[in-house]
Length: 80
Image (tube, rainbow, N blue to C red; front, side):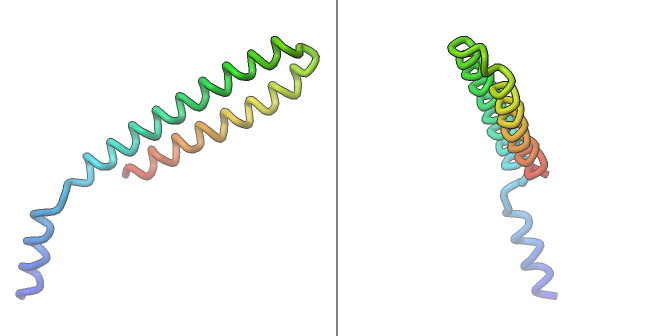
């Protein structure tokens, strides 16, 4: 019985997980948005320098954006 009351007391003093989860999701979402923006701007810059490599740059840009968004989704799911 004493163990149960100790567990209840510890739970009462615990930090709420909602604050930590929301912060994690916000940082992850912001990081994903910055990553996608940087990939897009550098891809446009690369196509401007070498228009003949448009296909390769587009492919690599889409893959990099998908990976950046994937990290944002992982951060979102980790907040729960």
